[in-house]
Image (cartoon, rainbow, N blue to C red):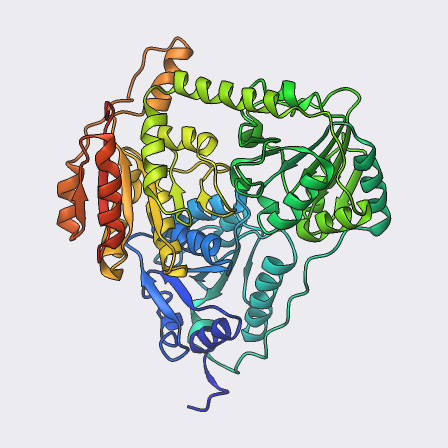
Length: 531
């Protein structure tokens, strides 16, 4: 068959490769098998997940680790429904994931066809930037370019494209050359000049930096030094400011009395940060009544909703921070921030964590000391991770990834698999709780199949510890918070993985060292009471 007239499924595989895609995560089925017809020919690697939820989390982890969009391919109906939880996580954490699914041809009333849904496209629209159905081959290629342009030019959000089965099977022309995405926009120079003037006049400037600044660490650190500014980062922004900076408060925004420290600032620059509920766990950041606030964000919706900021800069964080720094000129500013007070605040918050979650800081310290500084950690919704996202400083951005926004369980293991596929040269670790890991434990089989030296650290306290504590605090008798767990080590070995159960804090490091040197995944079970 001529190259310019082949089934659309084959042409789509080549179009993905031409747009820089190297890996597709998914599960084939009779409805989407035409996409698989061209994968090998196009040079695309396919990773077979054990569940569509795993495929979605893998695509998410791949995107976070590699900096390239993740692609997940699923069937109509239940396949896409299973993918929607990962898409919701990617939406809330601003991750570039393209979901490709088949769909049934439109027309006529519901007639109980295989995998039929009332509104498949509309269902996916609830957790994506957009969800569209390709009308023909040219429209399918245009949707691909729309997705990849959006990932590069704006705040990245997942997108969903569905293709009717008859269209996938029909012959189609080859895709045109990929449309080159435009670089993210730069803030208005006039507003930048005004922002620089406010910051230059400040006696206690403060930077609050979120996940949108992870590509701007050099610019953020230079600006903080130039201003003598204090700083906070969100959990997603850890590593943007070096942990050893004496004016860095760390990722303690969720500590209630961080508002007291924020209120001391006279000028605050918030960059790449939504200041959402999961950033603060309170209604407002705590800006002082007379504080002047500047907002820098690539998302116009965040700026439009901000009624507090005096100046709003729309554009890329790296460009915006560099422009502010250039407008300030040379020389270091003197500020009234006191390193001793900032250090005391950090120590106070560490003590609070230790009091709230006894014993966890010691385990976190042992894990941190055992891992190479370049290791990437993917965590789940579990008490040990809740403590670690505050207490574990990162030496560089994008080293710790936590499902903080959508807050789904089952994220850590498959996301870490995706990261290990995308960055095989970097150590990758998954950190999960004993309940959440059971959502996606079957993906250990995928890690075994791929031969990934991936430690899966499981915190096993035989309960939903955070929910139990919340019930007690609300004076509710704890119910349905204790579960019977499997023998995790035996389960791992059944998949063909290794398993370890350290009996002391000192035994954690050797176990991790062995796991990172293995030729497959290793489950490391940790329990309370380690000393």
